[in-house]
Length: 225
Image 1: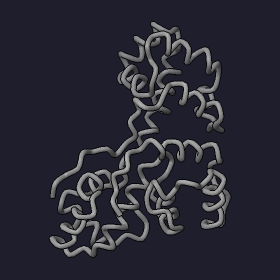
Image 2 (image 1 turned 90 degrees about the vertical axis):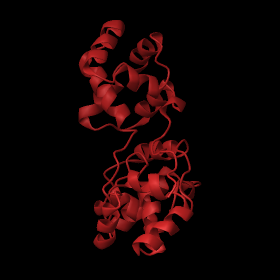
Image 3 (image 1 turned 90 degrees about the horizontal axis):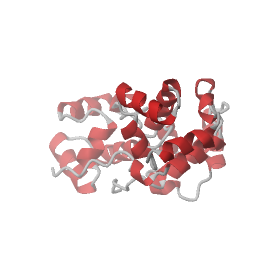
């Protein structure tokens, strides 16, 4: 199989520091991250003053303890604040999900894929985002093409900010197969969907889901259905 270019994450060079500030400003933060909202405009102005204009710039500047200390000295921002900001920015690059953690997926198929070197959502999309590649894999492994199609869709949804395997399954079962299928949905729609499907209050708000939808718009479309 011909492997496509790995485009699992959003291109953070396309997301401005101002957009990150807007997201932080509007979002309800968990207690451990509320300090990110303090003096937000002034702090981000200091970052922009040293040439940090995008989230890609930010993560490059804060890539290690040594560089964080350097940025702290240049901006007079604390190491603790910059470390917290790096963790927040890294959350825009969700970790791949083990295929075995996706709900209602046949464990036998998961093992067959693992034997092929495909053990998580990133591996799967790197190998079989294209329909033709999935057809080849179905023929060589005996996994039904319908199962591989489903796994590709679930893996695509897991690329979204804040969407884990359970929420990805919930979205898929509600008819959302790929990122494009979310077009036209509002953050309130998805919060309501979660609560209706699970029968319990969402532990996230519309502000968080709005960030999810905004990032969905800048993720590359890589899955063929």
